[in-house]
Amino acid sequence: MRMQSKVVCLVGPSGVGKTSYAKRLVRKYNFAVPTAITTRQRRSDDGENYQYVSESIFLEMVNSGSFLEWDRYSNYYYGTLAQSVKEIIDSEHPNDVVLDLTPVGCQKVKKLMPSAVIIALLPDNPAWLIERLISRNSQSLEEIQIRTKLLNSYLDEVNSLICKKVYASFSPDSWDNTFEAIEKIVFEPEIIRG
Image 1 (cartoon, rainbow, N blue to C red):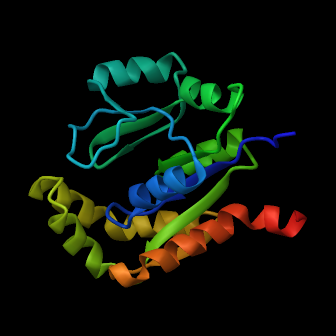
Image 2: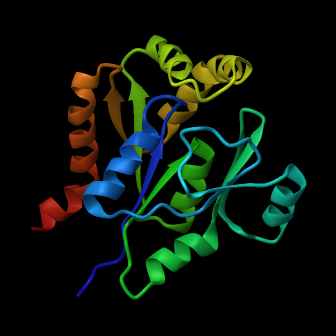
């Protein structure tokens, strides 16, 4: 008999690798990514799970209760469609779910789903985040500057969450170790029960 779907929330500053590690959970363990709605423009590294709307449509969706969680970050709104998560969890063959969220989004999910696992991905050295944001060439310089200005307050927000923390490095040699640390947290209860 299948246990309840696991919901994993990855949180951390822009450029730390949340999306890359979420994709690895999808590939290796068949995690599902629900539909995310945003008011920002499409980026080259966006996955297929994004939908882009105007701010007025987004706010209508907020008022109609369409989101499991939503937040405003770096002048744009982001939200996870509640119906999308419900369909994944309630399907005949449910998957585990991975979400890429802000600290506010994590708190909203944790309130609604107390068993959700929150993992903060933090840079071992915040200086490399700016270099990575520039090198991936998916955001305008203006957007990178806005995110850089928000970095310290964002890191304070992430550090205030009650969650497990994983420190990530910019070095490709460390990416597998970071993913292994994430796996250990995600599957820790199953190891203890087993």
